[in-house]
Length: 388
Image (tube, rainbow, N blue to C red; front, side, top):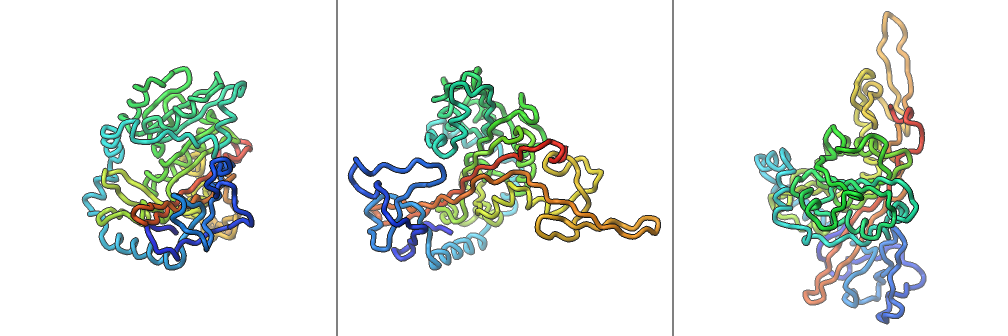
């Protein structure tokens, strides 16, 4: 858990190494930051440190008192939720609110995400010279602050980036950019939670999917369709690069009255939605376990499982990674038991929490940020085992 502001004793370092990293020094010659993927910096806040010495500290999480503060804030939010009328209004047409957002905030609103290749080495691989034909799909492309930085250093003449967003206004912003080159990028309107696939893309044709602060905009009931669509689009062995908001982030703690929609799901002041995840939840979502444990459709169903093909009937018991099911007696025959394995939709290559303590020296404030970052891979096995 993280929170917005707290007294000094709430800052608790995690996984402190034996030796301080060079960048704890104020000497420019030796304070370079680490650039390894999923390391999230190494400026650890030690018990005797002055937290106001630097503007930011890595891997800092609150103490038990800090967790209680967070829980108090969430209880206050629950007590003053969004009105039912507004809940329906915001959920019925989310693209409308994102259109308004991009009408008011052009490409200058977001900073270009230059850190992408550092955190996701696969982006270096697909953009290097001689990498061959590669297809990268960015979902929730916004105004192009992710796809254009990737293309800026691209040396692969056979790379194609599909930049998709369900806001037509966002897609227009990408197409109007001077960096928009049809040889390497195509912007399309597409909702990842819809039953269709993006225009110009077929199943099993994408090498890499980018999901950067977009999955949190979906209602929890949309997660299953979104994950299934991504699974359909990726080639076997294809990779998802994921980053989004973590539970207890400053943005969640600061939510005001009338913003709470559902547990960990809020509406911002501009009408856009946001969800705050935890690590175990994301692992269950992307492995597919959360969906397969809920219910199994009739064997004749044409729309279930990771690839849109029906799986077995309602589960009656789940133990570990197998589902025990009981068939009905037919014509006096004995009831038969069979076992269905829980399929792994995505293999979790990396999944971690990026915690940071930001310092406002002038106001003497501590602000806790929490982000989730992961790499998920489509199993590299025959399509038959994935339900095709």
